[in-house]
Amino acid sequence: MLPRWIRWLPGAWFGLLLGIGLIAAPSLFAVLPAADAGRVASRIFMHEAWLSLAFAAVLLLALRRPHQRGLFAERRTTFGDAALLWAAAACTLLGYFAVAALMPAAREGQGLFSFGQLHGLSTVLFGIKALLVLVLAWRATGT
Image (cartoon, rainbow, N blue to C red; front, top):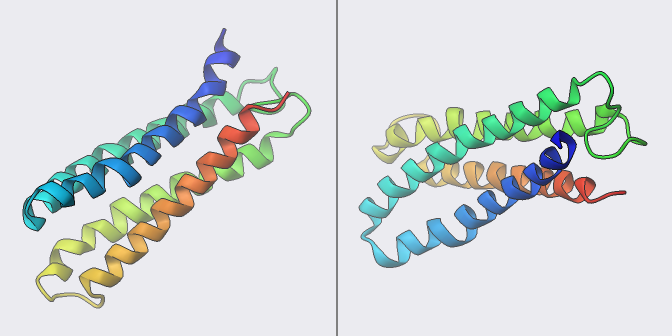
């Protein structure tokens, strides 16, 4: 039961990222004033960051199961899966907990980087994370 449940987690994680990045955030800015949309988007991305860390932690714990060589297929080693998971977690930590934390000061003209630069970096890290999770989801479909 557990291996089947673990195998759908990367797909659910990717769906979450896709829904937030391509549907929720752009929709906010289409219907709300920019300041309000920014506050709501910030709140959504906060929840996404914590959920991403939870997904990564659960999947990393699944890799530690002694009777399973790979997370998604017995013929694979755990190194590739673990590297993808750690990289996705690093993108979350850098993108939300480091870069996004600097945005309020940058919005007021303080700090080394502009708000646009930080937003761009945060977007790139989110995109990289989504691609890493997509690869994990693709690997989960392997036989």
